[in-house]
Length: 198
Image (cartoon, rainbow, N blue to C red):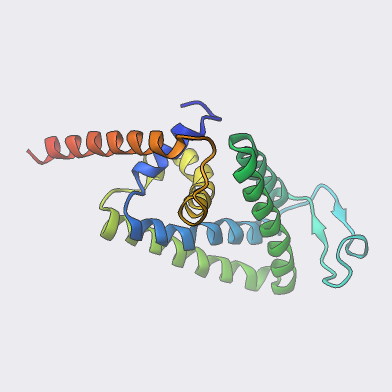
């Protein structure tokens, strides 16, 4: 699988998320996992700080260029490299998540922030595992490809929303080709499951 092959990435992830209810669950829970991770990363050591008066004097939050910033930057750059239009939107969401996480984390403080993050992560992960176990009836993609699943999940749900409500596709025929690959993957998985049951 090529690192910047959006069609293959999307088809791999889509094969584990074909049930509409499971997709809906992921749509609501994936980005909060990303956001709350950034909240926790706010407390990692910074290379240097940006002073709040020059940035957002009303909020008065020190924006530290720490692991959280580079985590968000990595995701943003990866999404833009996959698709310029949708990737730019995803990059903007990543940036907004970083800014929001800095604001929330600085107001909560570490002792409360990690509890909020833990509760949110437990809720979101539980929801997703229920989505897979009850509705999709297939193990999550992260069990087969951990890094790919974590990298693609936020972009996958964003592309799903863009397609459903605005008919967006990165290039003509993208979704038709992806659906063919998803169907083939699901049939292959079902065939393997059938062999295991015999």
